[in-house]
Image (cartoon, rainbow, N blue to C red; front, side, top):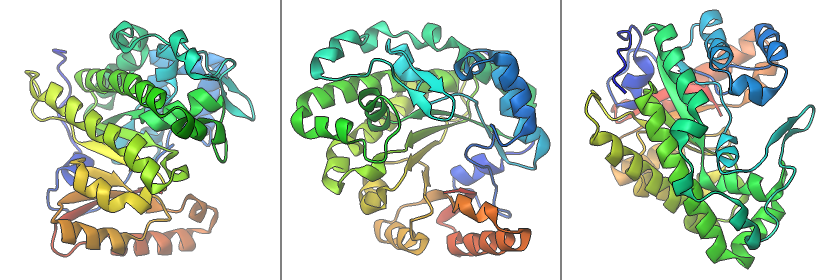
Length: 345
């Protein structure tokens, strides 16, 4: 974009993602910006509505920086929401207090796909300009203190919300599409993927130094369904984003990418073998030693991120400290082929 950003003073997360030798394990926390912080509520109340907060760069930037100002973290993740992409595709999404995201008019049948904009009609530099502006603002205001991460929801996870209309334990309505309407499901997943690619590329151009793909509902699929409806799109998105950015002038490096396929440990070997994501984020149900074995088997040099159970935070300080130390030990690779970014699972 031609922006001149401050020089980095702490690149620990970026270095770990790039596989550089580690003297310390860097840490950031998913959901580190948000409602557990009292200062967040001050800004949130001023905004009046969750998506108004996301769509107001000055406020979103302030919220993004709050945990960095308060804690000794090594990365910042832009304050936004995965559901801005369905909004960009023309769907209404509202945040219902005490309930979460809700689609007043979800996709009920394949005929409803005609209601969506075509990916070629979604111009993210316009429709999602607020997140891009927030990214640039945060990158400047960070002043090189930590690495800045941009993100998107993955295609299946977004599709699940767009059809189900709200959060669900099973997403049975969305899953049924995979078996009743596989052709239309792939069409929808491809449309979402096209927008994700453009959005991630623009996030990098506007200051994101790493890019994360959240597949929050990978866990509800069978291994076969994950192989057909999830993994190919993650592979495609990574490849297209990196190919596009590698042709851009002005980048010192193509931003490393993180894949978090929550609950998809059943397909961890395929994820490691078929993708080139520099960072694979693990949830708390994943056996880290098993992942280390796979990395060795596949000769896969990678950075692993995670994976403390968030509920550990309900323990006292000694309990939290003990579990964190154990996590650090479990992730450590004496051969240096696997680096680690500490995070929740």
